[in-house]
Length: 432
Length: 208
Image (tube, rainbow over all chains, first blue to last red):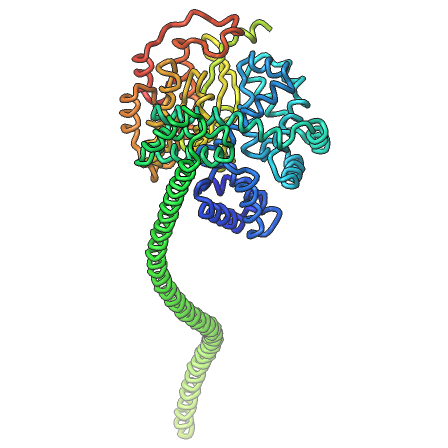
């Protein structure tokens, strides 16, 4: 359903979890009552109820509202919605004749505004507080009277302003925006309940019966011109008209007339019957019973077919589920594989890191060694230098010594020469 | 007072399946903004906007309708006095495209040929999900003798051109809304026949 995320978007209670609840309620209801299925606006009702109560309670409240208070409203043909609009229009003529004639002069149909009001039960049309106050009364009374009373109250409140408009568009826009800012919910409810006490369920029922005929006739006309989209629907209309007319003998002839358009085998029989009915207005009771039986049978057959269709759809969905679960399994396997590779990668990374650390440590050690070696080298150089100095000094000393040796030698030589000289002299002297 | 009442007013009704983007197109046109989620339209919604064109000013009344099929039993009365029907489909939904035939048929039954129909393929931003090509849209429009344009309300693509195109086609039409109070309507209207609007439709893209 595309409307799930389109229900009060952004509301904190309708997060993913809340939306699942909403989906379940609407799906369950569509199964519960296939003749209504899903109709836009129902998403808002279910959403509202979910804000107020747990899922299951919300579902049963929802069922009560749609099946009981709004029976025939949200069905494929929306017959009762159309009927209510006609009733509302008639009452508008009666209660606000001046306003209606002004609106008609501008070409505004009251239903353009009141239609959405009724269909949405004022959700999104009025401020929340006002909506809740109206729902409160509506649920308490257990019928649609409050819809009418509220709509009349709005007309009473904003009618004077509407009378000043001069254009259809302006009128509708004004009424929409005024309704949207009806913040004084007490005034609204008071005006509705006290001001329009004369609008009672009995009165509405009477007016609805009167207008329903024309709605069904119009629908019949449309289907006869081939403008109804699905053929099966016209049958539903007829069944509906039958169901609603069977309690009232006086109207049975009209009901039968609308039945005559059907195309199935027993419809020939019905045709005959309805022409009979035209003759003496009250068809034979037995015929009517037979007719009733046949129609009930047809209806149950249709319902069964719908149920079968639902079941089939369910099976298809389950099939899909199997396929999906297989897919999920495959994906999970893939994920497992990926996870394993990831773990391996991580391990490798860790090993790498370790190696790197070791290398780094070694590097540090080497660095230290280098520093020490450098220091040693420096010390050695210093030692070398001092040694060299010593060597130089020693060399100097040696040179000096050598000089001295030379000197000593020369002195020795001199001494030796002197001595030899003296010896020679001695040799000479004695004889002399 | 006089200049206001002299405004030519035209009623545009937006039709098409659920979630094709009718409300989004209108909101983009009216307020130049976009939200990913709009509340579903119940029954009908109404907005109006004044458009200032080169040679004149027109007031457009935009009727946004609910897409769900069962609301159709309520819709004919909205179509009845509209001068333009904008029929929207989602280029990422073939079904919504197929259903436009029914919508067009519905409008023709209600209004005959006395109405401008524009076929709009919305959500062109969904490039990967596209199911209906622009050629298919064009050929259907030609076949049905209606105008055609593709838009993306999300990206703001072709929205203004859509309305300009509609406005350009308007002069040939009778001014619809309750002629009784339409005391002063600019009468120098060039009659643009269907072929002309067709040619405009074919030219496609942005004309502004």
